[in-house]
Image 1 (cartoon, rainbow, N blue to C red):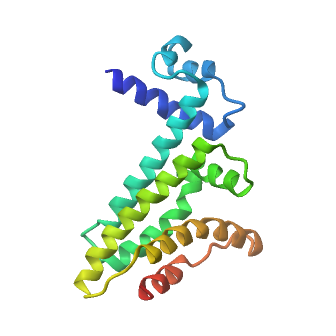
Image 2 (cartoon, rainbow, N blue to C red):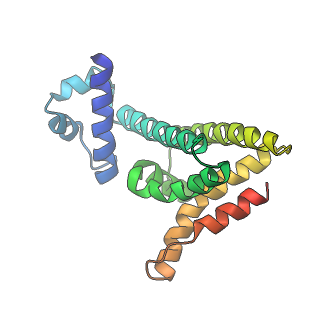
Image 3 (cartoon, helix red, strand yellow):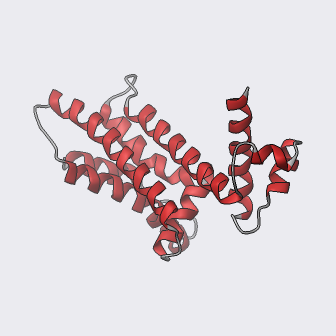
Length: 189
C-alpha cells in the first residue's frame, strides 16, 4: 500500500510538472489532484524538488522499459524493431514531456546537476539496452559493434526528435521519414 501511494503521488506529479513546470506547480495542487493532504506527500518526499527528481526518474525508467520492449520484440525482425526504436523517439514529446523539456533545458544550459545526472543515467542505461540487443543480433550475423557506435545510435536517435520538430516547422507539419534514416543507421552497423 505504501509503495502504491508513493507511485500515485509520483504519477500525479509527473502530469502536473509536465503541464505547469516545477516553478508553477505546488504540492497543494498535487495533493488536491489526489484528494490527500499535503502532509501525506511529506511522508514520502522531503520537498517539491525531491518529488520533481523522482518524477524525472519515473519517466526515464518508463522510456527505458519502452525501449527494452521495442528492441526485444521477437514477433518481428530486429531490423523492424530498430526502425520502431528510432521512430519511438518522436513520441517522447507526447508521452514524456518532462524528459523532452529537460533535454531542451540542457541545450540552454539551464539544468541543475541532479537533472544532468538523471539524464546521464538514462542515456547510459539506454546504451546498455541497445548494446545488448545489437550484440545479440550482430552475433547472428557474425559481426560486432563497439560502445562508440552504440553511443552514436542513442544520441542520434534523441537528436532526431528535435530534427523532426524543426522539419515540421520548415515543411508545414510534415514529419521526417525516420524509417529511411533508421535503416541507413542499421545497415551501417
